[in-house]
Length: 153
Image (cartoon, rainbow, N blue to C red):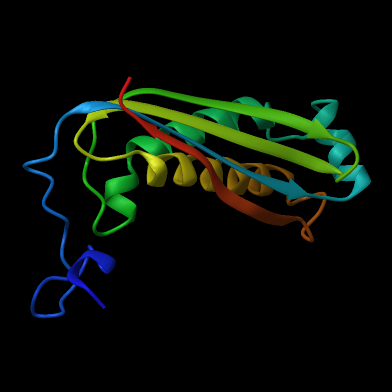
């Protein structure tokens, strides 16, 4: 394996943060998605805002934004980034039944924001789980993935 294939490993084979000192600062954007499946009863309560813990999707949106901003504290070799925008969108999908989540994160800097977008989706979906678990402890968070990553322009 070449040194390029394992960017978080130094010459001694140790985990190491990637040096981005010489990389140009450019506009970067990443989108990530995932979903949470749940019982029809839990889905109806989320959809109809009938859970005792309050506004599920509003709380999940704030949790996702907060998570994106703190990604470097959660994932050891991530660079702390100044994010310029974090947006979360939720789609109630009766076919699952459940909620689909998409996060879009932007910055201008020397490194990408895909980990921030993935973290935002993961924590937003876990927040939905936390708020609905009294109704359904069999919910499944899944499909968390990077949908798009761009830089420049």
